[in-house]
Image: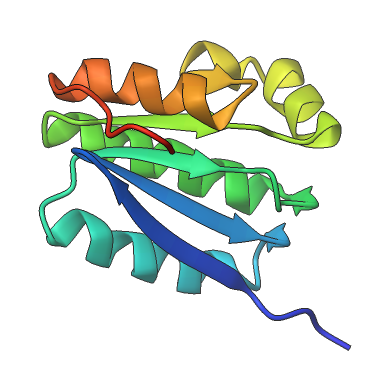
Length: 126
């Protein structure tokens, strides 16, 4: 039985926090990309991907993250990753993508870094 894609967006000041899971692979990437494009098209330029719920990420998922980071950069924005599980963290390190995609252990650290990039203080309590 295929697991349902979880996708949620929360605004924290000028930062869009995207929570998704449990997989980021060939089956889910087209839907995730479409949904994140709507977030970007609505004017959000600084996005934090909360990876806490991502149990599996494939090369398609990594490629989508790189494409998203490039698109945001071209629009004057940034992409940050938060709370990757151990397997995702190892994959980011193995591919050296953590040098391109800023990755933080906690959501709070990622939101603070993203808020600094957006030039505005984060909202309290998130």
